[in-house]
Image 1 (cartoon, rainbow, N blue to C red):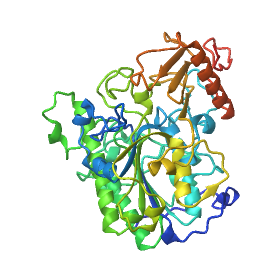
Image 2 (tube, rainbow, N blue to C red):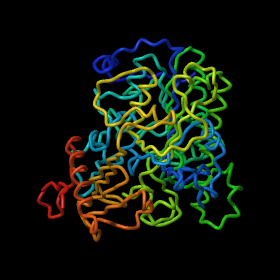
Image 3 (cartoon, one colour):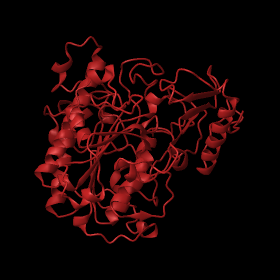
Image 4 (cartoon, rainbow, N blue to C red):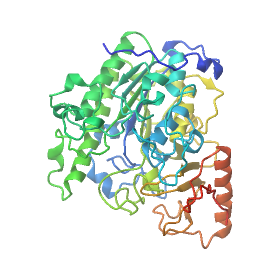
Length: 507
């Protein structure tokens, strides 16, 4: 039996302030499985997420490289988006999922350095480095208050060492399996004690999995086994569950998952690229194992699955800003291009059943590719809506249910990504509205101040229209600035050391 944690500072009555009208029988509520993969972009799979000009699935060379039969299985059972957005690095996306807000609003705008404030030389010093803070409304907190068993397994990365946000049990999770301040595992191998027995990796060791130390159990497998146990306990206790399966995979270190290494030996790729492919296949096995377990427990018909990545791909297959590891998209993790922002998204019932009352209420079509635009901050309002819960909390996302049914969302496609820090792409805001996307660079660093692309005509972001479409550039910049101001965003500092705050300028 897994250990249940009592929150140290989380106020279990806080949702009373923001949630209303909710008396729903447990049997009428869906179980929820959020299956989150670290550093997985939308092309890191055998599932075709890109669409052709007619909106039909379009396969590319990268799709032929990966083996993900269980993602294919889930995609055939539900709907997937060709345009689903996350932040370019992990912690901002993870907080957006938990809080339903853009990074500009919740101010976790950079990945959280577990030991020191990593704002960057010119980043805002008072960004929300400590991540999830006491008193904020969180998705697991609301669901727990409404009677859900809330389970976290895997990577947390919600706050630095010693902070309130460090441990998921502090802000609404009943069960925390292996979640801590560190976003990178010390090792994927049980033989290394997941880092504790590997010199130089002890600090990043994955906690709470001592029963697997000294065995040949891969980290992805250990987390999956523990999640299966936790879900079984909830089902046996008759409680609906919210299971947040958050894999450390496929983040570096690129250590091969030995169970699948033979599948890629013949490929003419570097060792780290082959290792990445094995980590993807191991993650896919985890997905299949959980789907099988839900069916075995008799709850597949009542369990809604959301599969997604937390930022663009980090596949070691090409230059960070090139059309390479996310081709035909440009860029990768931590860049301002689509390859750094678009992630896989699938929504499906774990087992299709036309007689299920829950599935009649949310009729997800089978094997559908949608051109609707979604984002990580839509997860919270969508889960609350399908669970019959309303909230007065300020959110930037919206309920995706109409799109999950195969319809259209009543909004112009929009996504705001704000990054006032330093990384592969530094000090920028990226904003999509309709088919247009503008990128503003606060520090030019050899780049153009503005980049403007029409994604319908130029999905590879190869033709910067900022110079030739000045009216469109001004329109987009005005909308971007309005969005930043509404979110009360923070901005980077000037290069001259004066401490002057740089706000975007409309040309």
